[in-house]
Image 1 (cartoon, helix red, strand yellow):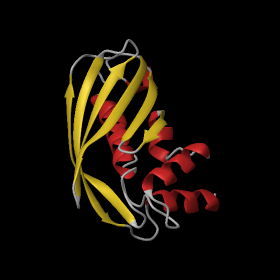
Image 2: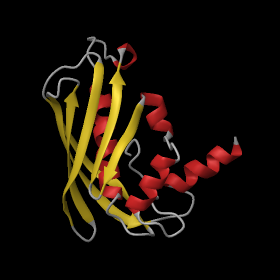
Image 3: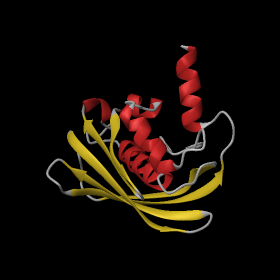
Image 4: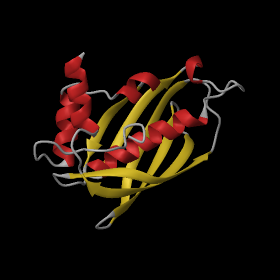
Length: 166
């Protein structure tokens, strides 16, 4: 979110986990996921996994994977993990994101595995381990999410309406 982490995650009275699982069953893929090339592969209560295949198109000027790509997949996984804990009519946004880059990545599979650490009434702390194809820790991220009231025409509901117009 950040990539996918935004706005309305509830529509038609569905709570977060039910909505995400339904979207996964439908093959839902938000625009940022299409642009970068990641996909949500697992979602559970307070957990999520996002996967991607890093390629030369994701390189920074030094030839390694651009750090922003790692930020995007970590933020997406953390956002989905947070979404799965929300009630119908709630949304959220990421209010803080921190990433430690622990080893260089050039190409290959990446797995962003997020887990909710602590959720209060209005904010939550989420952590994400980004692993390379050999299972080595490439990055570690934390994020703080804030729960907000869902607004009309945003988030998942908006993606669907915009798709219908095309």
